[in-house]
Image (cartoon, rainbow, N blue to C red; front, side, top):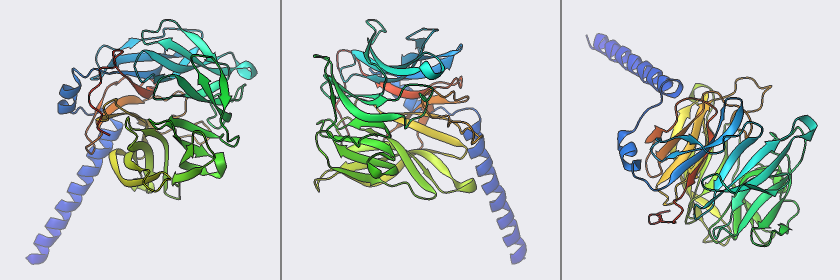
Length: 364
C-alpha cells in the first residue's frame, strides 16, 4: 500500500513538472504575458519609449507611451534605415544611427534630431554606438569601418568624443579602445562600461575603462556555459543591467541581470548579481535600458536565429522576426509586461525622458 501511494505521488509530481515546463515553454514561445499591476503603474509614467522596428521594407524609429499605448512612427523614411536611438539626458534630443547606400558603399553614420523628429542632421560620418555624457554636451562614439560590414558589431576602430557646441572630434587617449559595443558612461563621466569583443585584450567580457585615462578592468568574464554582454548603467551609476546566459541544453536560461557597481576599491567591481527577467532557450532577452528614475528596465525579447550561417537576431541592422519590446520591474523577478506584440524586429528600446526633465527621484 505504501509503495502504491509512493508510485502515485511520484507519477503526480512528474506530471506536474512536465506541465510546468510546458506552460513555461508556451509562455516563452507563445502569447506574451501581461502584468496588470505594472501596466497600471506605467499608465501615467512621464517618460516615453523609443525603439527600432523593421516594417514595410525598412528600419524606422518608433515612440510610444510607457504602458505601450499611442505607438507612432517617428522617422517615416523609405530610403534610409534609422536604428539604435539614444535620448539625451534632458529628453530634448535623440542621437541615432543611419545606414545609407548599398554594398561596398554602405555607411553607418550618427545623426541627431529633436525629440519630435525635426531638425535632423548628421554629426558623425561613419560612426556607431553613440553615447551621451550626463550633461548632454558630448556624444562619445566608436569610429566605424565603411562598406558591407555595417552589421558586424566589431567593425569599429577607436573611440571618439564629439563636442556638440564646438563640433570638435577628439580621440580617446587609449588607441586600443576598439572592437567593443554598447558603450556607456558613468554619471560623473569618469568611466565607460562596454562589451569587449577582443578590445583591450578581453574576449567577450563586460569591461570598464577610464574615459580620460589608460586604466581598464574586467567586470564579468564570459566562460563556458556562461556569458554576458551589453551593459547599461543606472541613472546614479550604482548599478548596471546586462544580458546574461547560463547553463546548457534544455536548462539554458537567457535574460537580464542586474548588479551593484562598486567603486570603493578605486577600480569598479560588480557585487550582488541577480536575475530580473529570464527565459528558456531558444528565447533570448537583450538590450536592457534603465528608466530615468531607476525603477524599470526596458528590454527586447524574441527567438534565437536557428541558422549558424546567419548573423544573430539581436545585432543592430539584422531583422529579428518575433522580437518585441518589454518592460520589467527592476526591483522584482520576472515581473514584466510586453509593450509591443507584432514581432516586427522590435529592438534596442530606450527611455525618452520628458523634455522638461521633470523626472522622479532617482533610486539606483
